[in-house]
Amino acid sequence: MIKFTVLTLFPEMFAPVRESILKRAQDQDLIQVELINFRNYALTKHKNVDDVPYGGGAGMVLKPEPLFAAVRDLPSAHGKRRIILLSPQGQVFNQELAKSWSQADELVFLCGHYEGFDERIRPLADEEVSLGDFVLTGGELAAMVMIDAVARLVPGVLGETASFEEDSHSAGLLEYPQYTRPPEFEGMKVPEVLLSGHHARIESWRRKESLRRTFLKRPDLMEKFKFVPEDYQLLEELAQEHPEIRKWSARWEQLKPKPKRRRK
Ligand code: 4G3
Image (cartoon, rainbow, N blue to C red; front, side):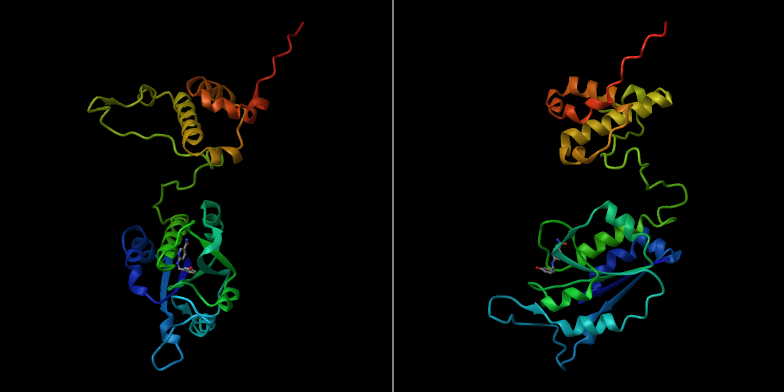
């Protein structure tokens, strides 16, 4: 059981986490999602949570007191807890971070709104994380995306048989193309090899197509990817089909099979 606690001024924005797969996961007690409106911790009679910036300028800034009070009022952690501040200035979220968070007992998301938050809020968090290089009206949508990405890694959330976990072999590559029936749709045929039942050839075709897509669509991912010796043949075929791939051939040259020494 992993608990997601969200500190937000807009708990109603989280309706989507009560639907579909995440709803089922909560019904089965695989995950828990608690929403806390930290406006309830505002000190003033008008429940102010924001104020004008010192030094002047446009927009409002999130005050520190309500968030501090809300975090201090959290029930003491029963295990590994990480407090996460959503902000465009954070480390960019990715699958590796999702995997690491899925080992925690509790993830607490602090959602800022307005033009930003008082700098003294930052040390409340263990880490500052961003969904990417863009600005949202608040951290809520980013928190929901991260909750979804982590929850699907919790055993049982995707069902008994679903293997969400790509094997280490394919991790870091884009997915290969998938097809289902019918075998031909509006003149577009399913690749013959997938109908062949020849397991080894299918595996090899999928590996090649994953490599092709990654090279063509996300060369940045290719830079970090660790090839295996069996990729050599596939990479040489791909370089024939897409000459522009050749510029990376140094990445796989060391995989070239050594000529076998002839036995006397
Ligand atoms: C802090 C997260 C929070 C400073 C939050 C704006 C984008 C992301 C906010 C600030 C956010 C993201 C709230 N926008 N890229 N908005 O993860 O300027």
